[in-house]
Length: 205
Image (cartoon, rainbow, N blue to C red; front, side, top):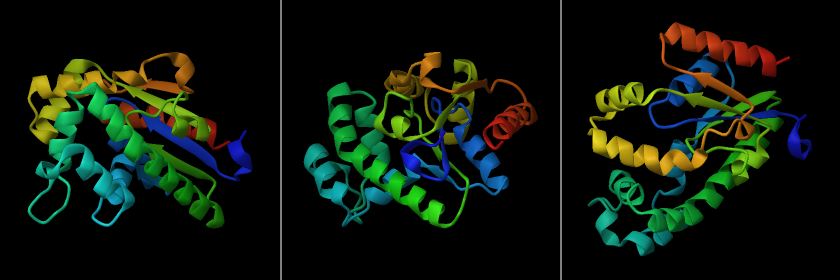
């Protein structure tokens, strides 16, 4: 059943950093489905001249700017993953704008006569505003040792920094009621892709 009478199935992909969300997005794109990364959307809305830009500078101060006046997102992430109150203020600025963009992309793909659209974000769950808007949500889980190994290799982060991010993202929870499909990504990539394909077969029929 599609929500809001929109003739397109809106699917969320959730999970901690390093769980395999980006790989899932690549998989669905390879199947020719539109798929968007909420982190990339946040980059878009935080560009100079956008609504969020001045509000974020007011929150963090000019120290979070590069010399070219772009926001230093890495510095922002380090701050918000350590400070819950700052993170809540930051989210109150950014999340409404991300949600607005999500609805724009849905509208575009409805007009394009697409049948399924995917959105990937670490904090997507049915209790969130975006989660309530989506039709189905997939949670990708992975063991902490796997996550640490992947993120360390990919981003060069230390274990302590990775744990700070995992703790900040723990608000997603693992309550089965918050998700329609839960899959584990601890084995070979081909096994993970097979699990994604199985879900795709279920939601596309």
